[in-house]
Length: 250
Ligand code: 6GU
Image (cartoon, rainbow, N blue to C red):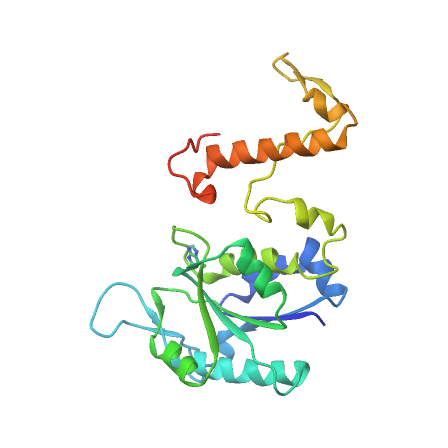
């Protein structure tokens, strides 16, 4: 098994899409082992309580530390049983206050053998959970998808898992498509075309593909695509080229 991913959440059903498409196939092919756990399994009261009001006051609720600590201990034991007794996971907390997730993060994680995604909800998790893990020598990452707020980590975990699992060797059939895609070389992808080479759109406008793509000259096509990638990156994401400004509309 190339990669084990544990997900701890109070909404296990939220992760059902991990059974579909490329990730579902990778799981059935034995390339990744995804285990989704209900955090409430590690509660002991009648109401299976995972949250409480913030000490010191304030809006919303905070996730209690005890279920998390029990969950991490149990998931660690289960993982070690399957991966080997000296395996150590990377624990990832999806969090808008985390370090931005990039293609290079995805590449790093795809080469590990064990990730645990810990999905917070409400306003967040009691800070002592992070201290407890750090003191116990756990490797922990706080990771953000971008500068906007989701209600919980579950949707982020779907995105993170897809970005990582597709890079696990054997998951994407044509390995070349991983080399050429957006961000793999720090540039955005060039425009793509397929048949018909001459297409009349629904408004009656005749739209031709760039002639060079029909030339059969692979060297010139590669150079044209690189130019397109560069121009598009300069226009949409000048930050990727170390430049300022740009026009985000195209
Ligand atoms: Cl990773 N988690 C949550 N809850 N919100 C986010 C996010 C992650 N990335 C952007 N917003």
